[in-house]
Length: 236
Image (cartoon, rainbow, N blue to C red; front, side, top):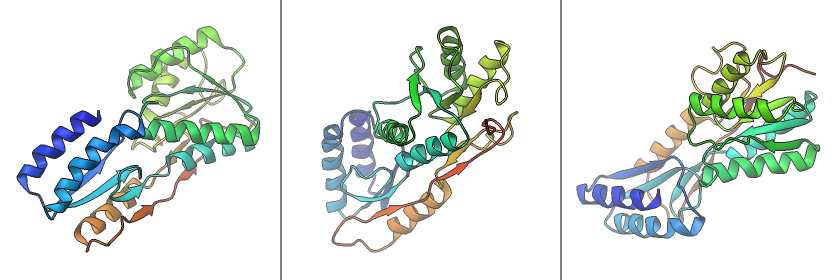
């Protein structure tokens, strides 16, 4: 939460570090970031450097992760492989990251004509267990989808577990795609289609900004998104 982030930054500011790197997503509407921006501004005026990794809603140097573009490219790639009816298993839709992901999905759905539904089960975390529960509920309510798109790889892997429990083979019986390219997404069976957000490059770029000289205006850097088509989404 933003309020918690403000408290953490306040504590860190008292420790007088040379730089702060803020990674991850923040919950709440964009206006809720104002208090965090104010606290970070105090730290910068005292001589510190701030670099945000994830989005560019804060008025500081940022390395922007391509969540919206990655989600868009994923849906376009799936449509090119013949998929037309998708259901989403999405978590954290109230955060800047979650909103960007959903906006990319919606943009591509309008472009390709893909139908997008949502899992009827509220998704309370990005874990395998949450994905399994959401997929189990989806199986009970829908039988005309051809692909499930999850907002994290862990959700997608959990969804595949629920499919197998219901006698549906992931990939051949129903396609599955994740997001984020988690370390083990290529090792599951079938290997998971996902989107790589160039996190390692983002981390290096953030450190380079943090140790470099500050400019008069915030710097906005972006890294690439790359769709990784694997066995969980065969051509139809």
